[in-house]
Image 1 (cartoon, rainbow, N blue to C red):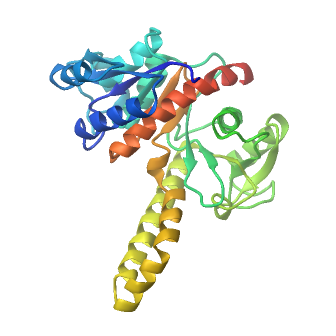
Image 2: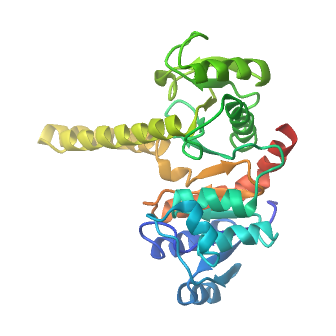
Image 3: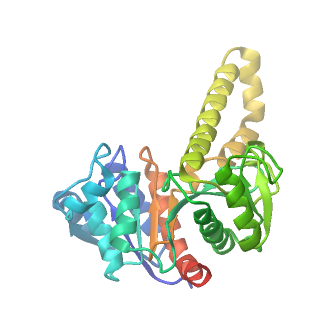
Length: 327
């Protein structure tokens, strides 16, 4: 039987909150009988919902952090916001994890400043499981640290490897450094220094990974600074959106293509399922004390549900404990 886990959820997180958040919480509770949720947000939103749902507790808050606010400043000033309170409940031990589809910057700041870093971690890093048709690939960092030192990437690799092992079940995950060429001497001085350190300190480091290797290469984990990782991730998401949009247009363009679409319908659904970003639900902030999972601002109810379930799985897998032992 699965371990019982309590996750705090930001009821105000996302472009379509609170409606899709409440739908997602309801679906997550229905799917996982060993899950409890503390729903943080305005009293008029969270209290009626909690009264109507078992294993859901309301935590009324009076402030909200908007997408346009400076993340760290907002976290410091708005101590009764749903994001800060949700993270504080984890720090206090009332919950083991936090999920939000709200401001990514505010979630990262609250996770680091409120929940706190694991001892020995220089910089927590945001990881994501890329929607690859070949196999799951963990990309880290994808936005938490725009400016990095080479030694940070060593820790990113160790933390992401622990995540790949415990959550994806990949034994001895192969690790690559995102760069512009395979050779050790390629890339900026930063990349070369990071390569030398990773070669010395990261188990199963396989060298540089080029852009073409990200979705279809010999790597289970790919490491980079947060600026590069975020650009890479958004490029992949944008490319997939454009390609599937164009494919949809073509398949609807004539009677022949519509008939072809009917023939291909099953296969296309399978492909969409394999590369669907909503399936993961969110990206974990590795290196903080507890689970801190950040979802897309445009998350629908399914993505919210999956993000909450991913938060519970993160706790049950003991990723943070492994990172604490490793770093």
